[in-house]
Length: 153
Image (cartoon, one colour):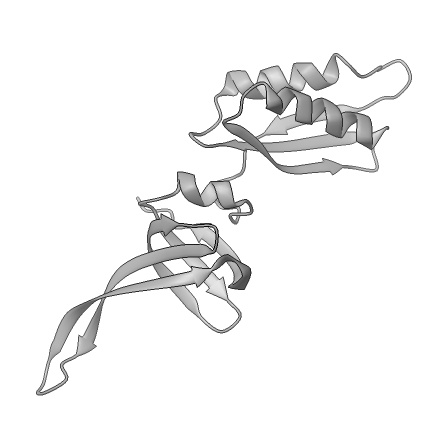
């Protein structure tokens, strides 16, 4: 299987809709091809079908047997691409860095990092009891080891 040809076909199909972007392209030893795409506002099923057809119709099944799967990221998959952060603004994220773990509402995304907001209960500075404190943390993208959207029912 010519992986460069498949990559070009996927890139050409994605170029037809600028809201879509490639997350992963895997080639299995058994001739399987898995394409994971995401979009700034999600990915409709019709776009997965269009991309699949654009790739499949330009490959020769007579010369090579292959299976093709075009899918979107699973809700439990970590965020990989910076554009995925933009589509998750106002959602709660769990973020791991080398030293710390954060959980908060994603309120801002920049070229340098993301900003999370959350509330926590902390002891009063004077006296007994606790108070609610609002916290905000900007985390550089380079320090993020894993970020996932927290599923809330």
